[in-house]
Image (cartoon, rainbow, N blue to C red; front, side, top):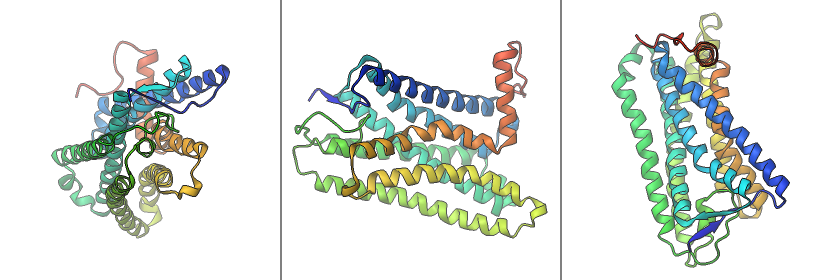
Length: 313
């Protein structure tokens, strides 16, 4: 097998072009939103804190994950083709798993950051120093890398001979396993068990962190910052809920509920939507980040002489 045929969004040329422009708009929103966050955090020394350091890493992962799937789908829609090479399919699976798993690990680290900031504020500088933050971010990226190596090697060690058509707009492990000419039951069970163990550990840690956070916040009098504490946690909760709910439903739903159209919608929800909306979610209730982004935009479009941000300190 030298190439694999991806699912086409539409059969007519007009709808293919509509799909191209729709995905292009989403992709540009993700690029601009995450690019502004990365630039603002990197340039503004007021945002050089653990929370914004992890947010910068999240934006990098978001940019990588959406760039793994959407450009190829856009190119196929524009040129009226469905093909992706065998090596390209393997690379797409590897990088997508690497970045998505890394993002979930990083969201777990961000939950710990909020827990320390709210429940142990006096120890925040000790527990989350610059070296500790770098180590935790590196652990998130490294965990995603190991997860991707394991699943990609496990999937593409199987001989694929059933067909070369997948019912998805990008290469995805469950769809590739359907092309195998050997018994894939044990492989599928292994993939599910490893993924569930990996994801469940992160999910339980986040739930325990937020139980402690809510208990601490509810003990704070309303006039002493309860609203601010909730506002720093709400964006993270929304992002985690969106990614977890759509991902779990996509991979653990009963076979009787599976259909190409439903699988396609779920794939868009967990692979395309989060990178595009995460910048909006994180900046909506964060005045510091909004001010920094506003300064970056003003510098880019209205003042080319100097940055209005204290970048040289």
